[in-house]
Length: 81
Image (cartoon, rainbow, N blue to C red; front, side):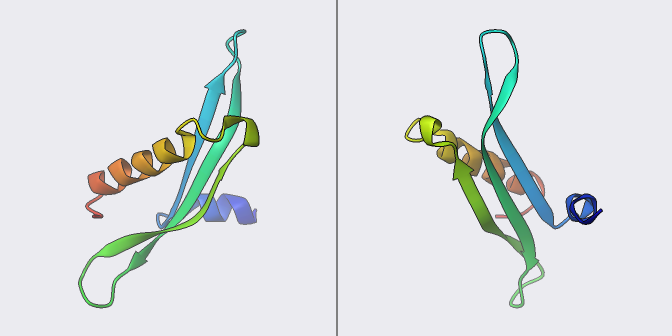
């Protein structure tokens, strides 16, 4: 129930990186969670990256960089710089 409530919050962001195996199945190889926090100095929000993880065998392949780039693009779509 707790995870369902967390995932339902607009301020909680979660992104998963998937790898497709030869049989067409998918495996989670990385993930990122972030929280949108309201600023006190302006009527705006910023994102706080809480966790970023990539499976050891997928590190140094740009997975983490892609997770952050995906978060930044999604944030821009929501008006967060």
